[in-house]
Image (cartoon, one colour):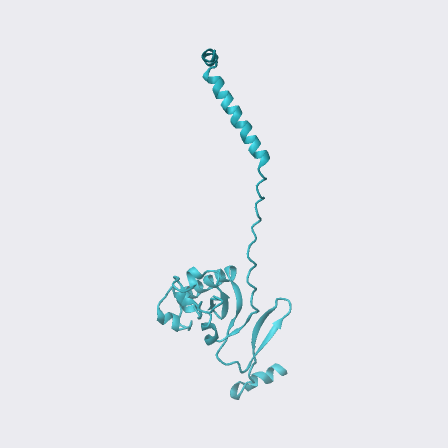
Length: 193
């Protein structure tokens, strides 16, 4: 009798029974097991607070070459100091432009140079109009990409005061104007008349 019963069952029927049994087992497992935890929302780390813009001497700027414990990397272009810490692969130790870190990179950028002589010399007086145009393009690029954290000033601050503009919350160096002396003193007399 068993053999007769097995002969009456086709392979199709066995396949259908197997699928049904599998589906029933999967349904029971799903009903018994706890639901999966909902995906956790991705929370980005809060951004580092932006420092208040301030004046930097060359010596102070050199401290921000990426070697500080906070990892800050600053560089200057035409007197504007930028925070390039977000790109340590470029400006940090071992980066292609690490030599710009902590210094005025204006001349080197204008000339497209990584030579030490162009990094040490910050004079722009002998640059061609084309070089100056290249420098301006670099400055515009940095203005769009990086935060301004201050301005590069000479090593001493006599004759310089710092004013804060409340609408922009930035500091701007203001140089006191000296009184004309000698032959040029007549210029101030004409302005007053």
